[in-house]
Amino acid sequence: MYTFYIITVVSCHQDREVARRIHVDSDLPFFEVFIDTPLEVCEQRDTKGLYKKAREGSIKGFTGITQEYERPEAPELIVQTVGNSIEESTMHVIRLLESQGIIPCFEDSRKGVEELFIYGNRLTSAIEEAARLPNIELNTLDLQWVQVLSEGWAYPLKGFMREHEYLQVTDGSVVNQSVPVVLPVDTEAKDRLTGANAIALTYNGKAVAVLRSPEFYPHRKEERCSRQFGIYHTEHPYIKMIKEAGDWLVGGNLEVFERIRWNDGLDSYRLTPNELRQKFKELEADAVFAFQDDDVPLDVRINQHKAVLNEGVLDPQSTVLAIFPSPMMYAGPTEIIPFRVAAYDTSIGKMAFFDPTRKEDFDFISGTRMRGLAKSGKEPPKGFMAPTAWKVLSEYYQSLKSKMDTN
Image (tube, rainbow, N blue to C red; front, side, top):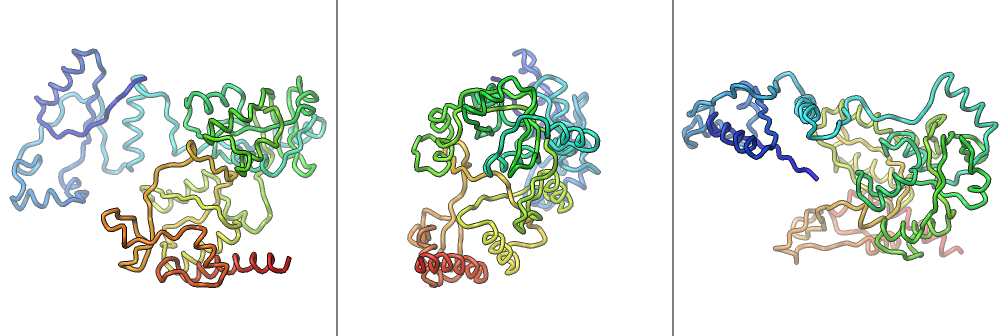
């Protein structure tokens, strides 16, 4: 395990050389990177207004204004930020670290992720081959994972995980992947397909992909669930599906014939990683905030988000409405990421980040309480949600209640 640090210093040349000698004497690599940016550009980029304060005299000894900046004499890298994007400037530093063996080769995000679709003569040949191959009939959950893999969401996976990849996720935390992407099969299918060099994957009887060089290995369900979810409670919705799945897993490289389409009126929102990257590039986005929700059917949720955009709660010009095609797993310890807690702030009449110093001002409206309000046709506190978005949600839950009452 190695650790490296990237720090920013504006110290004099002599002090920087001391830092270099300390590293050299300790047999540690040291690389000086000179960010060669003109002073006037630095002032334009100064979000804190420090240069202005220095020119007004309120900050003394400010490098570049009242104190000379000593340029490096022989830096390992010079980065010209004028005329280069943040990403381009960053890649110069990454390539230096790669060339010196400090970090492994980093995939250039500008190139896009590799998808698993095949085209042209290769596609024609694979479709013809699939008609002659033994097959595995996929269920809806399996096809969702084919979509995730084929569009590059799980890149650099080339297909369903082989055993060594599966173990790296469940045991070693070697790779940046929190959940296994696997294809379960029963014993009959495993016995029938063992020894096959390729397997056709079909959905509703139609071939959608070919799995190359398949590898079968045991589906240790209790261990998988315990590592992935931290529990083995068979009433958990995804654990229940794992328990009912086959006792074997099959991994291999995928060749997918075409994009998965569900024909539910929402396919236009199912953008691939490469399509999303292009949209973010067009928006000139410096950062992207994404969030997860899944308590109502997709069409209801999309209509609710459209209402939020129409009311201007989120800026339609800087918001991309898209669907992440992964199945919902509720995987808890390994899938969740830290987040800030928001609640309804009664002092201002709208949602806000929770402030523990005035916790009495916050009303935590739980999902259960919200659903109860919606089913009964009651309104939430003003400012809790955009009114038209609440209307979409309320009408959905009232329709469910009506169906239950009828039955």
